Length: 91
Image 1: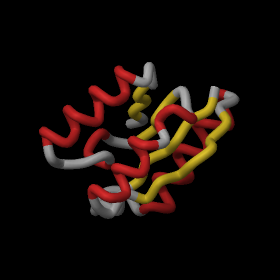
Image 2: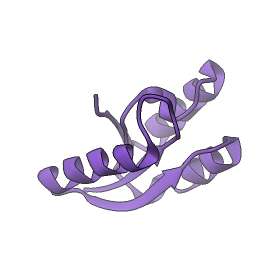
Image 3: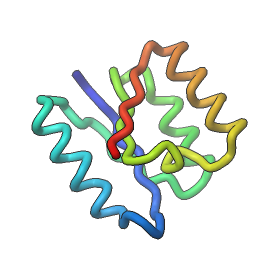
Image 4: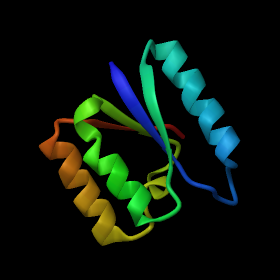
């Protein structure tokens, strides 16, 4: 399985902590982590959406790492369904 990780700076988790947790999960599960996307704005998220066809899954530590905007999140989830891409949320 190939996956893309999405990370975003937050009060609870630094970007490095998120990357470490995702990397550990990917190694344990035998997942090939092909991209780690640092999302700072919707342009970064658009890049991730445009590259969904390259991966089988998106891995995040929390759904708010994708976006805090409900409409954008709904659109992202629709793109996941359209591309048959799994969303993995680590907590």
